[in-house]
Image (cartoon, rainbow, N blue to C red; front, side):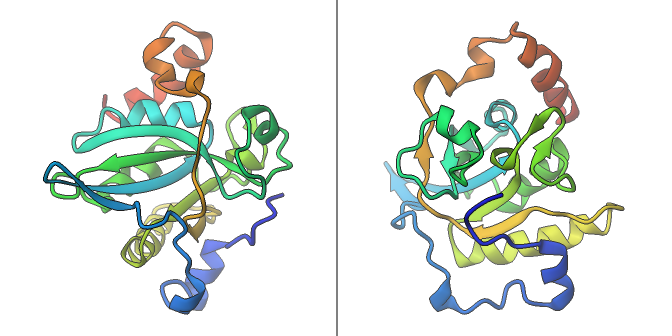
Length: 208
């Protein structure tokens, strides 16, 4: 399993510990790149893992208010990991998407609502046939505000589910972009078997 300390969210919610972490212990490690302004446009980042990053990328690229989606790796021990290394499950990284969005047009809460809709947060270290800690469900928050909103979203979503949510909720570590051939995968390969069998149904479920 992951070398990072795992947060079992349901238990934390029940204990009332989420949202009350010592600020000194929360190191949002993206060097404050989470909120930038480019030519007058505010940009915020959401970093999510929910199985193969191709799936999340394909859906979030179509969400109004999203500026860009980049596939990558986060949460592990090795710097500049390769896809082959992450795929062993031994580096501790999860496949994630880093979503750049305009907070004036899209709320973080809306991103999380779609996140719950397109993956199963109750299966540990797997999504369907994709099995391994690299496919775990995880929310890496880039600010204290995101941490609070994500904790509330988890609690609300749990009321609608029978099985306990096992999604990790952690301050954002270093994000490592995936190789170029992983970017925009669905758009480049819509007829590939994985895209037709796995990704296309997620797009339909999301209403795209």
